[in-house]
Image (cartoon, rainbow, N blue to C red; front, side, top):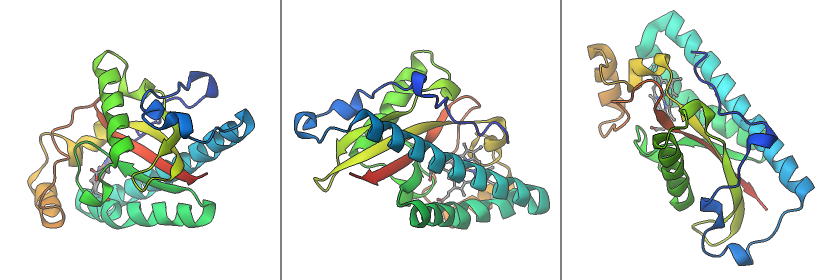
Length: 202
Ligand code: HEC
């Protein structure tokens, strides 16, 4: 499960996203370098906290009750951990994907563009573990400018139990019960599974 690794988040590796320069960019508020770096650091911390808390609980559940118990963790704890972090930090955090298990995680416009950007970069040869995060001030679907930040999530070997193409009977049934419209199987190790996504008020 140590495959649950974030793309490198060192400042030097971060590239501004093409998607963040979309229509309306000229009228978007500008951030000072200090403000930008502070936000990047805070968003990165929130993502790391979300990832490590979830990973810890997932591993514990896998060991104590196997994948069907771990499905409960993903189902109940993933959104709860995200809510706790939001309440604590004021940073709205979640996970999203182009192939969804839970429709509650559906991407909005910018998230979809950014996920497509990750996919394109991955297809062009960048390993999913090395995709730099994308961020910027973005006009949200409700019209307000928000600071957005996304980090790609690579598919590790341990993810395949529940997201691979050969999901076992028990796991399959448990998933079907909770997610009748599940699209999040058929992944291979090294694929982009999705992304962590952060939204911050300006
Ligand atoms: C024990 C089964 C299980 C394992 C193992 C597992 N997942 Fe999931 N995953 C789920 C479930 C269940 C959900 C739906 C969570 C929800 O309802 O928000 C989910 C949702 C997700 C989502 C949110 C997007 C969506 O499709 O709704 C991402 C991203 C994700 N998983 C990535 C991973 C990665 C990366 C790994 C490996 C490190 C992994 N998962 C391992 C069961 C699992």
